[in-house]
Length: 394
Image (cartoon, rainbow, N blue to C red; front, side):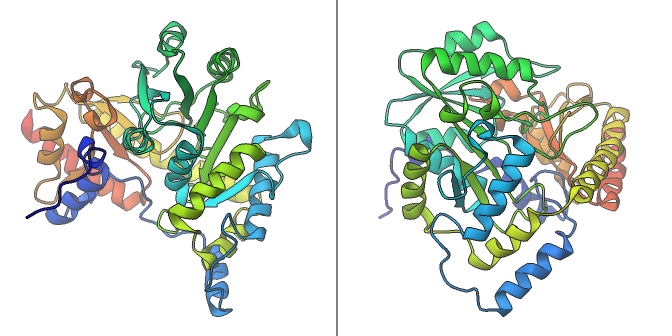
């Protein structure tokens, strides 16, 4: 006898991103698939975690976040993002919920504000969690296409996706997987529709500090009329190179915050207590840290992108985040899944098939995603393998 899975669980697969990491380990490959750095987290943050552990910070923190961390989040989101500027900034007691990563913050937010049958607008390609999150929360996704080469959306298509049953829109900027950064003009279109149709905006801003060139991060909640209808999600994982610490947060008006806190309490109780204390110190790092972050990621991007282009890929150069989406049709006749598995075989390079980011997998069959949140030597090794393998096929 085997236990029959629920209808919800039967509607989605395991994470393709994490599957490719597993395949990479099996083949002894170079992991440019999953979005985690292979370099150390900041020493000062690690030292703070060690001190907290040594001081026996071992028990539950306040369910919705240790006070020191919520205060640090409030300071940074007020100063950098400009959230709740009209009312004196983010209130750590009324607006902030600390979760087990931005991943939990997203599902907690959806469960907190959606009822089964509510529709949610999602831009595609999309981070793969959003689809299963809708299924688990009973929501119905409606997809709006981001179109190559600049990954912009059509305002008329967005408007047409909104129906009387639409309750929310998910906005991810800087964007995973494309690296697009929504400009203020695009966000104004979204904000206007949210106000017109009384929609909730749920924004995933986890890559908010990783920007290139003239790109600037704008939080949707700062636009006119959006503070009271936006849930802003971010976390420690990307900016502080600590994806395994599982520290994320949601910032929202008090009513939504109360609902998110209740859901969060019964999902996970709370994030790791000693790591929350360390995160509080990390959020107060000075401007040199963030300037160095931008410089280092720009160097990584500028190492990998030209090499991918030289290998024959059509690269969509990212304006933010740490991924490069590529059109593979110039180097192979294989579909994305077959090509990704061929590329990682026998010590190759792991990537993510583009079809995993689309509701209809056929729409992403010509794409793969590379992650460049890696040490220079890792990227250089990957470039050598790619050059050899692509050259061998031509």
